Length: 407
Image 1 (cartoon, rainbow, N blue to C red):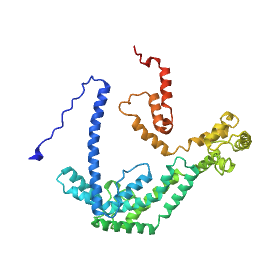
Image 2 (cartoon, rainbow, N blue to C red):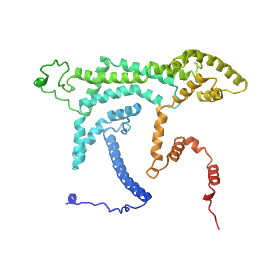
Image 3 (cartoon, helix red, strand yellow):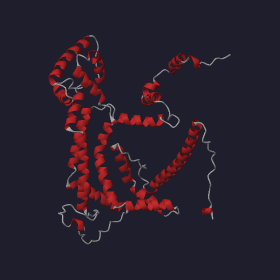
C-alpha cells in the first residue's frame, strides 16, 4: 500500500500580491534554489551510478565522464563524442538496468533511448568523432586570445585540405569496419534488411507531368553501405568543407594577412605586398597608402632616436593617434586591425559573466550601472588590481550625505 500513499510537499507561505518586489524576488529565488538542489541531487546520483558501472565493466581503464554537448566549440563536441564512444558499453548496461525498474517514466525513457542506439547511430558516432578529431586542434588554437589571424588562416587551410583527403573509399571502409567492430563489442544486433515494397505509382495529379525527382525515398540502413556512403559520408564531408571554405575564404585571408603586417613584431611589418589586399578590400587607394608608409617609416625612426619603441599593434595605433590627420588611411587600417582580433573566446567569456551579473535582483538595474558591473566582472584581472581603500575614500568624498553622524 505504500505506493498509493501521496506524499505532500510542505505548504509554503507565499507573499501577498501587494508585497514589495524584494520579498517576491527572495521568494522566487528560494523556489528556484529548491528545484536546483533537487536537480543537483539527481544529477549527482546518476553520475555516481555511471562511475560505479564503469568500474564494474572496465576496471582496468580510467573512468570517463560524459560531456555536455556544445553548439559552438568543436573541441567540446569532439570530447562529447569521444566520451560516448568510450563508454558506450556502460551506457547500454545502465539503460538496460533502468528499463527493468518499476519506475514507469524512467523505464519508458530507457526503452526509447535503447531503440535509438542501433548500427546506424554507431556508424554516425564513429564518423563525426573522426571528423571532429581532425578539426579539434584548430578549435583549441582559435580559442587563444593571443592568436595571430594569419596563423589562423594557414591553420584553417591545412584542416580543409586534410578533410578533403578523407573523402576516399579507404576512409569510408575504415569507418565502416570500426563501426562494425564497435557494434559487435557492445552487442548491438544487426538491422534486418527492409522488406521489398511494391513500387508506388505517381499521384493522379502528376500523370500529365514529367517527374525527374523521386517522389518517395527509402531510408538507407546498414545492410546497404553504398547508400549510407552516398547519403551520410559524402554529404557530411562536403558540408563541413564548404562551411569552412566560406568562413576562411581567400578574400578574408588577404585581409587577415594585412592585419599581421600592421604588427611591429611581425616579419611583414608595413610591407606593401601584404597591406595592399587589405587596403583594396576597404576601398583605400594604393598610392595614398604607399606615401603614408614611406612617411611613417621616418616617423618611427625619429621616435626610436627619442627612445620610444612600439611592440604591438595597439601601441602603434596609440603612437599614430596625434598624427591621424596626416596618416588617414593607415590609421583607418590600424583601427580595423585592432578590432578584428577579438576572437570568439573573448565574447564567450563575456556572455558567461553576464549570467553571474544579471541576477533576478539586478533585473531592474539601469543600463549604465549594469554595464559597469559587467565590465568589472569581465575584466577581473584589472578589477583585482584596483585599490579598494582609494575607491571607498573617493566615494565618501563625492557623497557627503552618506557619512554616519555620531552624536
